[in-house]
Length: 196
Image (cartoon, rainbow, N blue to C red):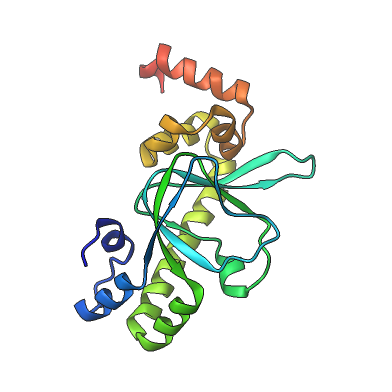
């Protein structure tokens, strides 16, 4: 079984081909419609997904009840709420599809079985978790050290699908700015692209 999304997500030099085959076969194809919830606040995650096609986001509700986007998931990424899945606790986050999504589902029980059976899956997991920790740390630092314009440009470069398909309000909350500020940034970039 070959699959581009799986190959990208499980790109780890020590996997044997038979190990990858077993891991790949453990995933089940599922479809979500635009606006459908993948995970809801208060529920415990029982699986993670590999996003083959589409765009999804995670968000929390702040103390005023406003949605704040915490992450955008693009194609060939893992859709996961790590603490809920591995600590077996209810999540504070919601994960919702911005577009129709095609995913490959890996349920927790099956993952646990293979995790104990295949040492390289454990090593891959450690490497993946370290990389994610680095990404989240970098994002939290950039929220304070980079201008809103630079944060927008980074998002545009790293995840252009987000700019194309996500509503302005969701992008603004992810960048930590108001809708009005983001509109102004976008207008400035269009009218004075050389200044940036």
